[in-house]
Length: 632
Image 1: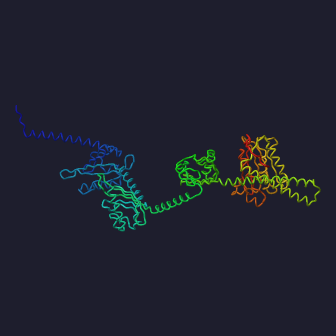
Image 2 (image 1 turned 180 degrees about the vertical axis):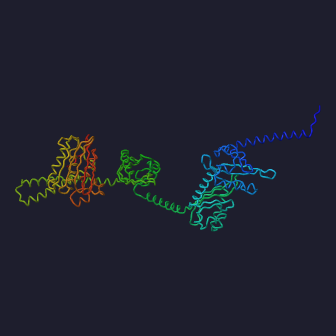
Image 3 (image 1 turned 60 degrees about the vertical axis):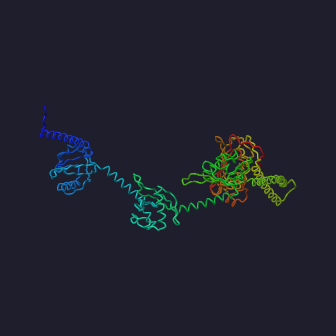
């Protein structure tokens, strides 16, 4: 059976198909309408909200139910100051007048947050009439914040670029300026606005512009240049970079140009200074070395090489211990460099060792160089060979020792015969004869003391003095010395204070050395304290030492001379004026023998107020040393 299809059937089939297509489109629109992130609003021709998608809840906090059916003027989300703008645009749109394709307004969310939204309005037209509108609302708050940050960042960059003393610019591929900072104004005496769109030839001298163009072209070809260029008497460090777009097409060049003329002048001065210093170091007769913070040799001069027998190659780059240090000196060197590190630049003697093993004495004068942070970055030292000086000093000391020994016999005879005469062994003397003999006896005693001092000094310097410890009552020696000095104490009417008991304090010490210590310190305290003053002697037993303190209310030691008080032949200026007699050897001897026997000595003093000397002797006893006894 054949089936006949009429035109009406065909039309009905087409309508059904169209209905299906329309339904599918509606389903797609509804899905899009529901899930799109932007807010979609459908208004009727009066401005009432016919429909609104769920995205409004996320953006404004208001649900579609709270908004649907209301006129847009009633929506609380729209701020009052923006409502007039929207109404104005709505009316214009209804009258067919031109309105912006999109605009921004501020809104307030349900929880009170202020946000910025972008509004796009599209009218619905049917048979030539506007029957409604489609409004898309997008939250652009974060975008606006990002734009604001970008603007601020751009302003900072612009401010930074304009505050730079360097020339900073951007040129297009035709070498016309797109951007230039204010440094151009100072250098070329032209406003930045007058540079933009120009080439170098428009405002620079021709020769300068030609040089700039050559380096620009080179940068365009090679992609990057960084070098120093002289322009007349000025030197510039030039950095230029080719600029390309994402597709690799050349768009121009960016450049930073710094005036380094002053730096080049300083570098030239430093170069000349370095050459001068190197020539000076090379010409020095004394040895000279520079070591880094690790103790490694950075530089040495030829004099040090000749002195030690080592070559530069054998010393440069070598760390401690250095090959020319005598092994027994390591500890002393460490102590000396610790002092240097504290800023105490004191010369010190030590023994160096030549490459062939020969030892010789030197004086080292150390110092250091610090960086801007105050950190020591290198040490340097001059080294003086004092072998010849030591030979001369030894010869001189030996001569003094010999002369002193030769003088002792006649001085002893003079002393003995003077005593005999004063005792009347050779007959009765008249008053005038007795007076003259007493003068001879006193002067001879002074000479004997001086000879003894010179002998002690020579023994110290020759290393021939001995230390022979034996059990000694230190209190007893203190009393013996005080008894010897009692006449002077009474003559000056000094108040004597003793801060120790009668109980013996037995320590293994050399009796002569202990006597010398008390005799020198007490005689100084008595001699350099004015009449009516006070002298105090204190002896106390500590955990590991005996501490002796001798203080006075005397003239004191000037602060600027205290560092010299233990040096040979030194006497403070204020003492020389008041007490001309004195050798300046006593404290030198005391310090030398104490340090070699295991003791210590130091002092505190204030001018015109007095001085206190402190001495320690180990309870375990003085260190024994073979040699000749010290003279008292």
